[in-house]
Amino acid sequence: MQSSNRPRRGVFLTAIALSVLILLVDLQIPLGVAGGVPYVAVVLLALWLPGRRYILFFSSLCILFTMLGFFLSPGGGENWQILSNRLLAAGAILVTTGLCLQRKGGEKELHDVLRRLESIIEFLPDATFVIDAQGRVLAWNRAMEELTGVGKQQILGRGDHAYAAALFGAKGPVLIDWAMRADEPGLHVPELLKRDGDTLVSERCLLRHDTGRRAYLWMRAAPIRERDGRIVGAIESIRDIAERMAARSDLQKANRELEAFVRTVTHDLRSPLSAILGFSDLMLEGQGGQLDETGQEFLREIHTQGKRMQALMEDLLQLARVGQLERPAEPVDLNRVAAEVVRNLKGLLDETGTQLRIHELPSVRIPETLLCQILDNLIGNAARYAGGQGSPVEVGGERSGSRVRIHVRDQGPGIPEDARDRVFQVFYRGAGARAKGGTGVGLATVAKIAGLYGGRAWVEETPGGGSSFFVDMEDPA
Image 1: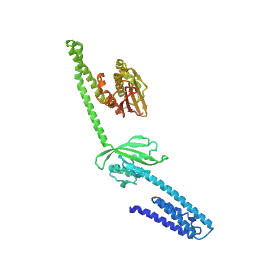
Image 2: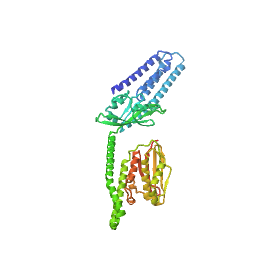
Image 3: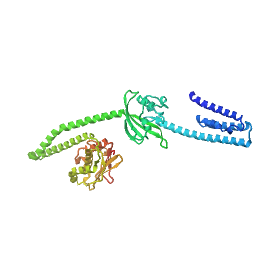
Image 4: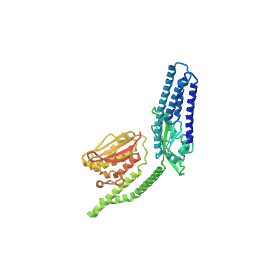
């Protein structure tokens, strides 16, 4: 506290001494020292002191000394000339006082804004810090202290990449420095994951000081601009996503194990199941006459359940394989894919009497086999559960920026609201679906494909009755 008061006391004493010195000189020179104008410098000194009271005090003191100079300085001209000079000097002092008060008001408002901003930054859950145009640290919140082990008082006001040393143990440009150079054409940022306008996103590993474990940092930085667009600083927020990365790794491992298990099971079951279906076919075609009606009914049920198990295994295998395909180099014509799916479903569409209406569909950079699965499952479901309702099943799609949405809309019996989320779960089949065949895997496959491409699948009620299935996915140009 004493150290902060010393500069204040020095400025105050300097202002008093300068005022007395100007008055003494004024008393020795006819007409005064330029009529008291030098007192303006005393008022300006008050800008170095906090608050407005020093400005008002110095201003009053200078006007008092200016008037004293009028009465006490030696004569050297007409009284009206001397008085007018003094009044002009007093006016100059008052104008300077007004400007200084205005600036102090602006500084106070700016200080209040910065204090509120600092409070917000302080309690952000992500580690966050701010630098000015010279690279000096302006803000360093509590989460940054916990992440780096460097306290706020140790780093505020420091430059020369002190923040980089605190984070990574060595000085040098980091993401926030590249954000400061956002206006440079053709800027190349090392380890950049994504750039959205001025905002830069990157990831980097770090050995945490507090736990001794390796952190995986997700970092986001952006420049701070004046109203005229000039960059005057930058802000960076940092999040440790090591736990999320570990969970993702565990999930990927579990998915690989599940896929391997599904492939093994389907492979091991395929041979005995083929034998069951083959012999049941033979018996139904040639030897069925040796069985009574009850025996033949049992045999037909064995064959039906065998076919159902075969379809279930194929669906499970297909579900396990989803996710192993990369985006194609060229866009896929979704209209052509839809036409192929309709040809494959012709038997089902004819059997159910489904009227299909396909609107113009966008081209997308998603593997054709996965698009086939989406449309095959959605159109097939609509044909089975709503195809004979008289109203057409509509297929459409649209693009909005980097996202594409496909919909299949029917006027069938619809899906109860409490079951709309569950229809995308593996093996879930509603009460009305059990009599229509199927394995309960198709919509789960649609949802999985949508998730793999940064989107989701959901169902809504069609206006007037029925179900509208939507698939929304990320599809960058």
